[in-house]
Image (cartoon, rainbow over all chains, first blue to last red; front, side, top):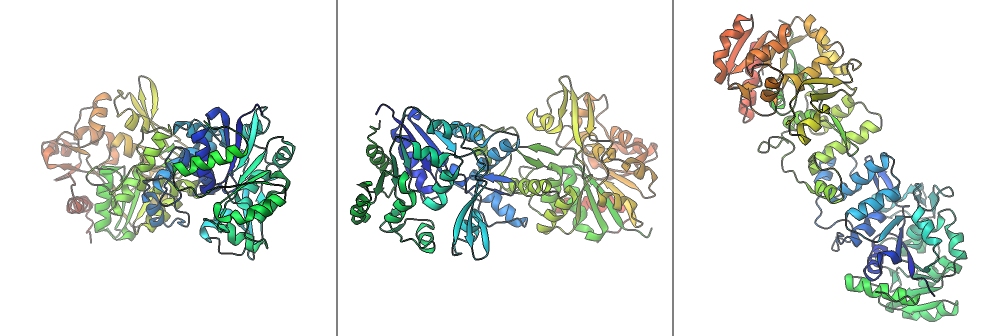
Length: 317
Length: 317
């Protein structure tokens, strides 16, 4: 294999950690990180892109590792004023985070694309690797519930994932083209692997796969697709994945993850706590790597990145 | 005189102090505070109204009395992030202040008028008195310089008032109607006085007077117009008034203030440090009150408010 370019698909916090690990061991020229924008939403006049921000903060070493989301050394003064002014306070906006939302929002309103803004802002933070939205067109994840379709952040933050999910859909597709850098990465001659980060398959990866032409491009590719399972010890580390799998009538297991990606998947990395799943997964014709997938620090992130890359036979730097 | 409603015209910091004093001694039903919006500007996608905010913070007791502007207990985390992101940092936005700009901006963008937004936000902060923009239409003060016309905040903040001013103009007038509450106050049967707060006549009061029909309404009124001079000891306490008077070829004196308001003015309140000006001002047919006009605390503000009201023969509560 002559190529060594890696296309990583990532959602928010968990995916962002592996994305940061990949960035730590790959040259900027060898990595394109495509990020889910289905969680994006408009709030108080701001365009908020939680997953792009999680990846950005993780790569810029600005992420709050204690709270698990947002920017470190964060304060909440603007939010306190917004609350005093009677404005919606169900989505907690930190002050430093707000700087990001403001910068992005005014530039989008001025006509820049989300790709352009993201490139500009990540560069300003000293990030050399490409962080790329899945599409410059708005795609919005919605979760079906007994009360109808809920916008993702309404379901995730305001409702704390309490409603029983009956389905997931993505408003805006078909009709949303891949961002230019995503399309370019898919078409690269030197593309060597696709790494699906440990993100929620339904809520974070499916939106990316739903973008016009992406699933077909992935089906037609000649390079391995490696998914790092977001399950650890038979459940999700955080987020609603385990609850969602149950509600959608699927077992909370790596078999469901493998089923979900189907023929797209060549290789799955599962946690040591789920080593017992390996036989069943191999019986499906998948390559399986069992490795520690919980990422607590930079060392963990890099180790897991190397595991994913070695699954693709890529030698990391 | 049967009426007892007071219409106050205010700019930013100095005017806001007297406006707060008036609010402390008058019932909400008896006071309309009309605020200059010529300083307003669009920045990073936010509509920033510095004078409305100064008056709002003063009446809500949220103003920073040490720094002299903005909100007390302020922090600057969003600004630090904006700077890290390579965004313009010449206008310093505090985090708490940012909450105000965000709330205003998204509601304006959603179609509310500036009057409506201002009423809503001031009520939310517990302000019972009416704080009213001079107009719901954008009027933008510009300062003439050797390099051409500068937008006000560019002149005031970015250039720190350094360029020599050759003139002042207000983009958007004629064509900007008074806000509904301003027009209503001008037409009130029970209007008893107009108080011009100690704000810069050229930069803070003239924009209000330039709004369609306002000067004519003031000329036609039958109630006294009392101006509290912004000069103390022959100069401006803060801001560019003294420099501006010199550049416009006017002496830095209360005579220039009186000249500027001309026939509109009935009564001027001047500081004890300028008591020597009283004779000349009286010789022009003006009533003159000499009183302490420097407002360091709530007591000073209330005392000066009472002085201004007694000039109009209004008994304060």
